[in-house]
Image (cartoon, rainbow over all chains, first blue to last red; front, side):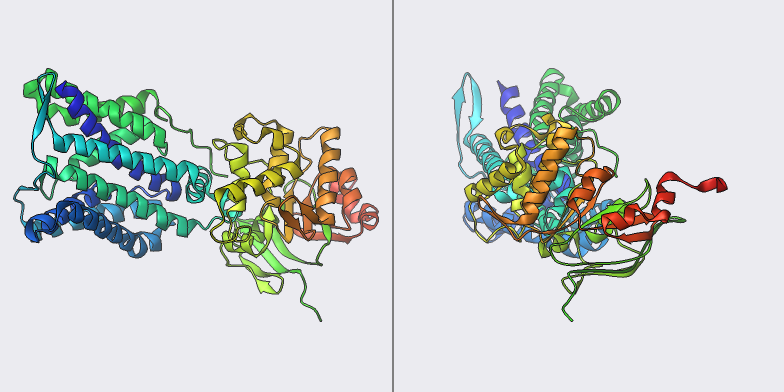
Length: 287
Length: 256
């Protein structure tokens, strides 16, 4: 039972992160290493707003998401957009960005672990397992976000523009899609998703300037397993990895340190056996 | 003098040492249909890609309705009223056919601000109706046959309501019957009018094609490219009887 809860929470978190990462990769071919750094920044924002300034946590979360999104858009405009033609340079720039965030957080908040209190205290017992209300809330918010995102992508004009550009940028341009404007919007959505993830997960974890590393690796594993650029793939793979991780911790209680290596092993296996992932597309040669 | 509709001057593009398009000049009037022919590798597709801004030329100028479009982004050129189809069809294979066309309808040129998805969908449907594949609207684009894919390309191009339509081998890979149908569609489009919610003034067209017999029936004028340079220009009759064109096509190499 515990496995299911942990698996669901981890899976949901990974799903949100990986989908955001996939989106911006799909539309703009940007590999955003700083993606989970935005998630960390969101956590710290909530800490400042709700613990230091004493704002209501919900308000704190919303402001945090907005702040992070603005950060993301600024980073895109001034750091990524000028060098977008050179994909490797973009990759390096996003690594640098992640480092900058990490060092900035270290300077401001030191390396101490910080905690944010839960929105709703308390728990209930189901089949003999303690389930915290905060966990239920987190899971609920994730489901709502995923539903909103699905609607946005599948049922709106913006979603269609994003999906078409993700599939074939050149053709979409020829049909009048403004690719740099779309990349900007997608960056906003992607970073907002990272921000939301940080916001709902902050009360369940501890904040530290290095907290972006582990989810980054897991998220990469998810994206590889699900197939680069496939949103459905990211979603399914996130839960697979979430449960695998929970299972490892449960089966080998002393081997909790192994969970990172499990993700990496899965990643390597997928790359060896099925490089395009579960739902990935085989990239056609550039013409 | 009135501003020329399309004016191409000294357009040059090299790939490595190869001059794919070499110092090409030509002009087009509004509503004119121009055939662009030449042996394989003559630079026809490259020329189209230069006109739509996918490729940037090394030098030269292209004025569309008096406006310099070299250096503009592809989507801005499309929004000025240039549309293009691909020779090797490139649909969004993972989207339904209707969604493929809806993407075109989303361009700022075709869509008024704040238009509802349903209206966009209806417009896309009209474009499919025009191309004659509306009955397959909800299927995935990957299921279409070669001929239907060509028609999808045309539907997508028509949906942006262009003033200048660039068709890259619209008859390529089609059966004789399908070719006739396509030719009929092209003529109907050129006449202009209303196709459901879509409105056409009758766009000017540049058609790249190897099926010369069919092409001759549609076009007003023909431009011949060979090794990237302009070889000949004139009415279909003039071009067919031009000895230099015959030589380029049949190959007089080796001094025979």
